[in-house]
Length: 183
Image (tube, rainbow, N blue to C red; front, side, top):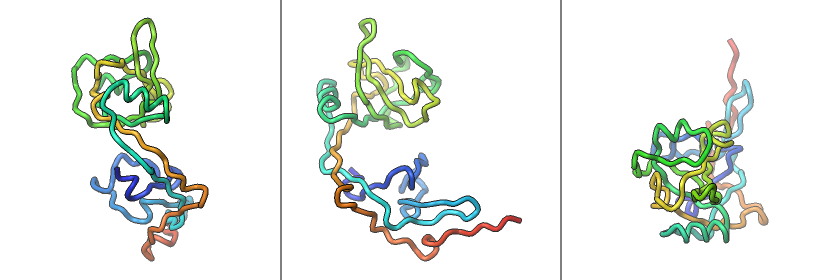
């Protein structure tokens, strides 16, 4: 798992971009953590707090998924995205296309049952305006959208007690604010 080898910073200084180190973003100190000021631009923050994991693994069954969520909290799973899911607003989602090719990652936060239909409670990254405040309910136990194929768990490592910080060094260009002149 990438996080266990490289650490991550939080979204306050490294906002989600839907791109990564292998899809055009690169891996600079500014990408790791930056600060920005209106009219002054952005610059790298060299001593940002970092987060990592001490253990991680995969899950093979619905029962394993539920047990991990119950014991230690949310898990991540790959899912297939369909036009119908993009337009989801509420209710228990049941994909009818049969698509299971993984092309997105979500977090399963829990599960439930409504009128005899078992479902997962899934957090998406599309913002709180989407779905049910950024989450959706997906039918459970039938591998809908391939959500029960490829799931992982992780245990956070304590980096906050001893205030562990990023050690990525910024280039001279990244360490200074880019002053923008209004014309």
